[in-house]
Image 1: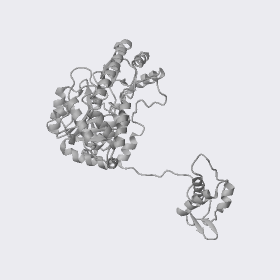
Image 2: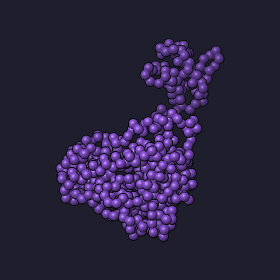
Image 3: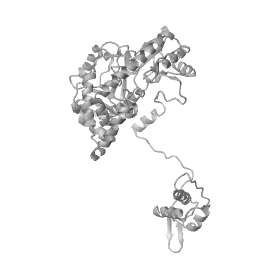
Image 4: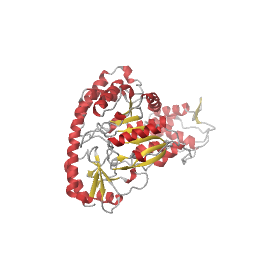
Amino acid sequence: MDRAIPLSRSGDALFHQVYRHLRDAILTGALAGGEKLPSTRGLARELGVSRTVVLAAYDQLLAEGLADARGGSGTYAAVGLAPRETREASARISLARYGRAAASLAGSLDFPGRRPTPLRYDFAYGGRGDIETFPFAMWRRILLRHLRRAPVHTLDYGSAEGSQDLRAAIAAHLRRSRGVNCEAGQVIVLNGSQQALDLIARVLIEPGDRVAVENPLYQGSREIFRTAGARLAPVAVDQDGLDPARLPTGARLVLVTPSHQFPTGAILPLGRRLALLAWARRQRAVVIEDDYDGEFRYEGQPLESLQSLDREGRVIFVGTFSRTLFSALRIGYLVAPRPLVGPLTAAKWLCDRHTATLEQETLAEFIASGMYERHLRRLRRTILSRREELLSAVAKYLGDRVEITGAGSGTHIVLWPRGRATEAAIIAQAAGRGVGVYGIAPYFLGRPRRPGLLLGYHRMREADIAEGIRRLAGVI
């Protein structure tokens, strides 16, 4: 056997390096079964290490059955081990239907803002909070206080439906700010709104069920239902959002973003909201209201949630704190009609037991103390200022070369170029000028009628917004 074992003083423990080398030699047949291993003293002397190191390595080989100790004779490689191939081959593992559907998405989902080379003027629109505005010092103080005072039992598994304090705080806030008709017992705390959609799909959808979705729509939302085996029925969106008159018959469920349609930014008017609920009643369908950024509205009278108009318990309201606080928090929630609370809570338990307790308790105090609403007011003022700068820059540098939608609420707008350029060409040329913009085409089921560009602005400084649009004007 070649006993030249390369040892690294900065790598794993020395005994583990010796053990691993001998283990691989035995498993590959370099050390034949029954072949005697060097004496511990001799090997330690050759390697320039303590005999204790070699003894520990041999003990591990003996414990795993890779070697045999023969009293008065020495240590030998175990007999009867089939030599392992030195070249590792990839095993062929068949996937389930869900696995095949998930695998088909690998590499195709759009993750805005994750560029190999950061751009100076990046209008990324992902669902992220403004981390410069968030009061992290206050958050840390609350979190540390809960950590110091937490009884031992609170560090065990928590309730699947979430902290009672946080559920009560969320329900109270939603009643005030969004007109949601709910009690704490209808709120389930989750690891983000994406988990809410995943649990709904698991609980309500059978393979082959028809699910109506807005077209265009956020990829992560629609693909959850497609991967669950649903037959998607895309419903075209116009300047007023989804048209209930175009909804299909036989749909089990419809997914909508009525407060700020993603990605076009359309706001569903009251007449269409009532028509949508009437359709759900006729079809005995469930409506998922994804209120991903309903806290941000800048023009006209704020519209209360679609759920507030529901009198039959057909709407599941889904929300998240990723946009208003910070995305790494991973806390979202859903408000379920009472008959669905039990099944959805059980599905949450089966998925991951519960959401992190200390973060829930911290957020509960943050909301109940009024700090959350004060933060929202500051955040709205900041976003409003950036929005005004963006619209001013678009008017100044782009003028009638583009049409704007989605400016009335939310944290992004859509520019619809009036020329003949393609999305890909504009995005590539803009990147060459240090400007990051994002195409709308990936959000369509089918080909869009015209190119569009999504521009997020809530995390950009006003000066950068103006300069970014000035540079973009050289492309469009």
